[in-house]
Image 1 (cartoon, rainbow, N blue to C red):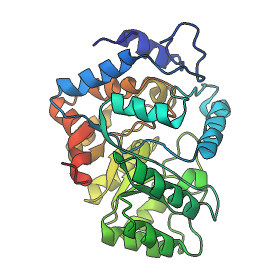
Image 2: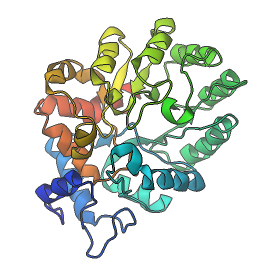
Image 3: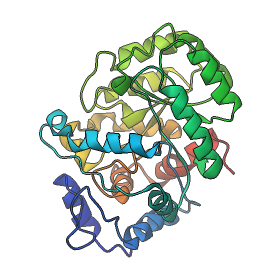
Image 4: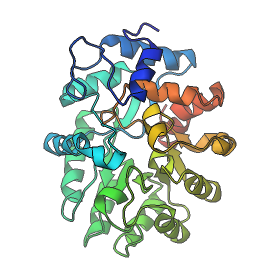
Length: 327
């Protein structure tokens, strides 16, 4: 589809845990960005499905100094991935990243921000208000943390127009069932604002990761619109089960099914029929820009599941467009 690197070569590079050599002499994880050929391949993917573009519910835009620290974390992640390196494919400044995701034809995306300590969430939310104001194709994203005042600032974020929240149980090292969070969960359930939550135990387990803690939250707030990031990797079956039990629960595809993740936490093929049946509640997510392979590889990984074009159309655009009321 006009890519400067054939798909087979891209996927072989992904299997090796490396960034393909889009530009001669490029150093993995240090740029430069892929050539326009990749944008042509991404656009060819969704145009071939008859879609107006993509809706990506799991992308990261955040204050630059915070993002640099996130990249530093991934640069040293080998110990948690059995020695598999995690080079950042799209390591570039904000303007370049925005230009590229728009070239890909992503109609709507998110600014997944998340705190790792108390006192940080409200500051991130303030940044997110400004980012959403100057980035109209970004769904206004906010976050939260179990701390005094969380109900107040979550309410303020919702009133300011937040359309999606991010919760990161692993990085924040908190119990999503913490009593301090309970009023905030109730508020978000009532408002119908989705929460993309990283609560699976990949790439390494935390004290409060896994299906148990979040299942307790859903038991108290069954209408809460939780979106399980990474398909709940690696506890896929358990998180599919929660989606089957609770009508408002969804899952995002972020990094799931890719060669990189299949090496670390393969998706059990016997679960594919259940994944197909939940096709109206699976949402495209990619983790752009913090991925160790080209953006198009996530799309090809979904395509090769063999669940059909209707399933792909729903996942890559229709489900997200319906959830967020996009025209």
